Image (cartoon, rainbow, N blue to C red; front, top):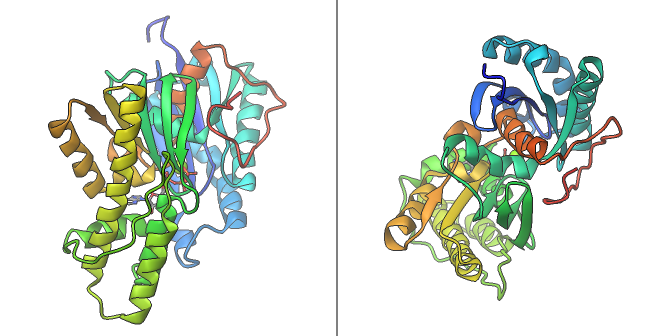
Length: 335
Ligand SMILES: Nc1ncnc2c1ncn2[C@@H]1O[C@H](COP(=O)(O)OP(=O)(O)OP(=O)(O)O)[C@@H](O)[C@H]1O
Ligand SMILES: [Mg+2]
């Protein structure tokens, strides 16, 4: 390890993944251990907050040890401890925040609080080594659909967001209604590949850069309830196509408004294969470059938190032991 290297330990517990990672200089992952609770929550059709917190408490110590072991590193060699402190489920967040504070206090290392959504954006720095701000980032996750102008590594401006459902939520709801189960995104993605976009759905176009997905979601639910024999694959493909058209329309407006040539996708839904292809096609048609994280960094993981933590660290954005969980933390408000 070079003396100048900065090593950050990241902790993520905002929802149903317990993850600890070690990342060098914000871009090189030395370890990224993720324990997903999906199997546990599957039978309830969604994440049960109380169960999520308990699972985090039971496993976090083991995940921490495994992360150090896999990176072949000791706590002494770490420069700072970073953790997600919002947005997310309060009980789940508190586990990671408390663990990070205890580690920071015991080892006398700097503490860096990270906004989970800024973490999703930072996942791109790990996959795309040449990526630098400014760019337009489309954050499409389970809880958010945000269009963000990323002016610099720690400077963000929300320029559009959903007025109702997050897109991941809409994917999960559609999957549940047509009987695909939870989590729905990957299942809709898979089934849509067998279908064609031949079902017309109402697309909501807003004057500004905001989004709305509740109309399209409700139309699917009504359509399915009226006609349960509808071809599910066609329904999934039509849903994906219309959502993607809405996203691309606003992203292209933002690209013009902010005069940038880079579009970055982030969050769990950026794993969607149809979306990834459609955005890549833009690269060929227009003079812009498209970036997205590798698949295992799209959904929640601690490597992205360590990467965002690194950029906070080098910009002297530290937290102290008063750091608390903030369930509705907004992007750009990181400590
Ligand atoms: N291939 C896919 N296609 C579409 N959606 C997907 C795919 N893979 C995962 N998703 C969706 O991504 C979401 C999970 O993403 P993520 O982990 O970023 O969300 P979250 O952490 O729950 O929410 P947030 O990050 O907003 O707090 C789920 O809604 C899931 O259905
Ligand atoms: Mg997330």
